[in-house]
Amino acid sequence: MIVSASRRTDLPAFHADWLCRRFSEGYALVRNPFRFHQVQRVPLTPETVDGLVFWTKDPLPLAGRLGLFRPYPFYIQWTLTPYGRDIEPGLPAKPRLIAAFRELGGRLGPLRLVWRYDPVLLSPVWTLEKHKEAFARMAAALAGASDTCVVSFLDSYRHRAGVFRSLGLRAPDADERAQLIDLFQQSTRRCGFALRACCEEDTGLPPAACIDTARLEAIGGGALRHQKDRSQRPGCTCAASVDIGAYDTCPMGCRYCYAVRPGRRILREEAASPLLGPPLTEADVITDRAMPSLRRDDGPSLFPSL
Image (cartoon, rainbow, N blue to C red; front, side, top):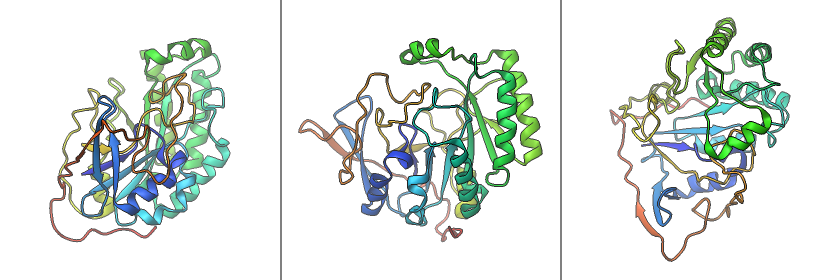
């Protein structure tokens, strides 16, 4: 099975100690986000994990420890936008992140880094012209460190409606989307990126599979069966995975975030706890998570040096 780390929180940025300990000890406990007292024990051994996908806006706290994950085919989905602290208040300075992206791409190779320009939003500050300039500048700066750029547009969430109104944030309309895609394509062609769209219709772009068996095969050197993840949104082409994160545990504070509800106390982890988020209770029922293998052969995988 493929492990997603994580759509629900930024594990590399804020829970790197916990993440490393979980893989060192070979398992994590994961609470069902919709049924509080259902907890699964997820094995995290090289025998049970067919691939590993990190999602982050800042992998720097984890970057020096990536050698721990060498037994697993892994890659990093790195969201890197030009927005300022009014929209992404918890991030390091963007020039530092751009430099880190280039450095890490040089260490890992472009297959292991996917650049996400996500979400694309418009506001009185973030106009079409400003996106054109910012995207072109970032694409040029990141050229060679990744082979793919994934874009998606702002989604509306009920719990974010007030924030969107206060900042004037909105999704581009159909005409604006078409203009932005044209601008993005000009830059990615020039800078050597494949441009993909995540869960977006009518863009004319190939769909992105954020959990991508083809990429994991290219990294690990083995063949994997692709099983569509039916728990995701319509139009999602991701492979099935098990997520080991927890909602309401990311203090990044991004104004568009779906994974943290405004006003919620951010739940911190105990690094020694196998569970991220609310601690175990006597009412919790722990079951073992089945991890069916996706491998098509029994031969050894090939892992490029880190």
